[in-house]
Length: 307
Image 1 (cartoon, rainbow, N blue to C red):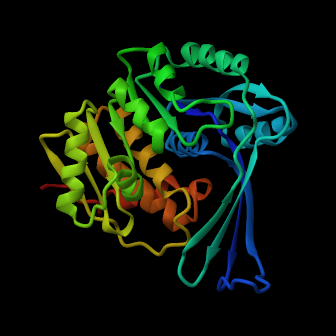
Image 2 (image 1 turned 45 degrees about the vertical axis):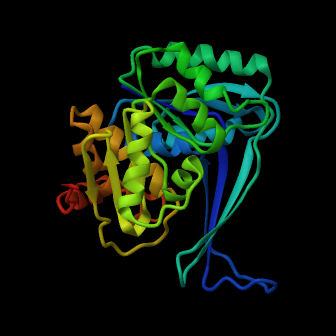
């Protein structure tokens, strides 16, 4: 079983414009509204791949009906801790000309110490039997930067996977997670230096492994992805697909890797699954447009080589 954690869920609204024009009227089309947040997106893709997965997270009391309807449609297990009011709303505008995504993200609902304690107990109960536990996304107001680190302390010895940024990720590294999955910008922020070539990116990832992280997977968009354990490093080029949107591609990549790991693949082999899942997401237009059939077709075209 896999458990994902989504402390800062969202109502995700996305729309497309033919060409983004600042200070002008932009006509929106292909408007979509869905349950969101990294941990939820990862769980949605895993569920569509028929993995045994459950998501643990907060839910706004005012949004409960909307979220429960979304979970029901996905047939997704979600263990919720309710907080007053609404969760955040996120707006993503996709430029059809360039596929550039402009995001407007709210902070999230305020979380009390009591709610965080309830969440910790719920996570322990749900994830105790899980093979992998993925901590995903930003932290809502009321959750300190040490929140992920403290959650990891509740179940020592588990295969913790962290997809976060900034100080939250930095503190989580103290617990020596099994895998972290930064994109290039997030890795640069973490190591506080500009990473301009694949060799430099590889060196930065290896340095993190030697500091205690078991594996680092770096997603580099159209430049592919690399994965290292500090000794062995592999690289997978991105697949060429007809892209509709890059929204959720990183979440789908993580879901694909977790799916491979849960099937008993090595962490290096799981990168194949991550690349295929990310490409299927880009081709479909988001995590909620992910098609398992396309994932299986694309999987045959992924190459992973040691570098």
